[in-house]
Picture 1 (cartoon, rainbow, N blue to C red):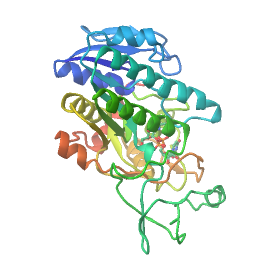
Picture 2: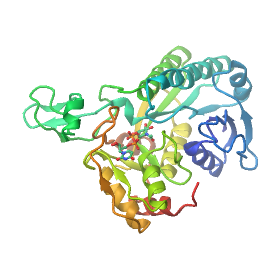
Picture 3: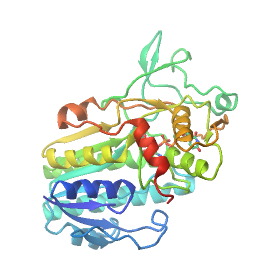
Length: 346
Ligand code: UD1
């Protein structure tokens, strides 16, 4: 297939590109090489046979040129991370939502009907908690006073009791709690609107915490695995926020790439969301220990610090992806963390 891959020079993009090429697809990359992501400037060189168009998805003309002659689009170009403060809001709305709007309008003009779009587990907010008295509930907000006093678990919204954790399926109500999450949710809705009007298909890939070779480091937008690796390489202990018991699903970027390409190849009708995770939740504390061991570094320090935009636990149920797209993750947690620990410093 002739595929347009937006954001193909990014962390996930480069792995998706490699997977598309491995499976024999013809790929054009549209990437703005924005300096806050590509700190080496415009120095990215695509692999042989790949056409790189340097441009921004917010630019109508760039989309128009990039979409000529393609059969499917994988849309990864976005501003990622949690956002550092409220001043980031316009950039999330512009980069992620206005950009997606331009791309969708261009796809309609060019009659391109297949879209795979990067979304995120953050659209679920705090997800689902299990109350002994009230069953599955949406966890209540974590108040700053509770966090400051070291009480990190979100309460049952009905009785205030501590909640057990549960895997989040795709039908859980969306509850974005920061600008990035809101922009991802809006992208999903714009894409669904487009599909309804044009008869196109959309696979919305709700990625869990992605890690692996090439992950961005040393920026305010870096994920926790990259932050811990950088600290350990500098001989410092990883600083684990809260009490280290917050749960995530760390999924390897090559598994993310294989899931994304499976969706691009197989999703030819309708609108579907897929959680993409390894299926095995881990705590942030556990991950810090795995990296510290792999790098033979200092033991992690649990600091009790907290970030207001953070959710406590969020863990995916990726059963739908496994069943409907016949996808399986292939990288074991310990192997993936060891690989990350020993990759050349970026
Ligand atoms: C991450 C991604 C987000 C993605 C989501 C999918 C980043 C920056 N965020 O959000 O884009 O959509 O996964 O599930 O990649 N922590 C520490 N010490 C630190 C930094 C963080 O303990 O130095 C803790 C945080 O408090 C949090 C956890 O690690 O509890 C994860 O943080 P982070 O890597 O920023 O990811 P998410 O918020 O899960």
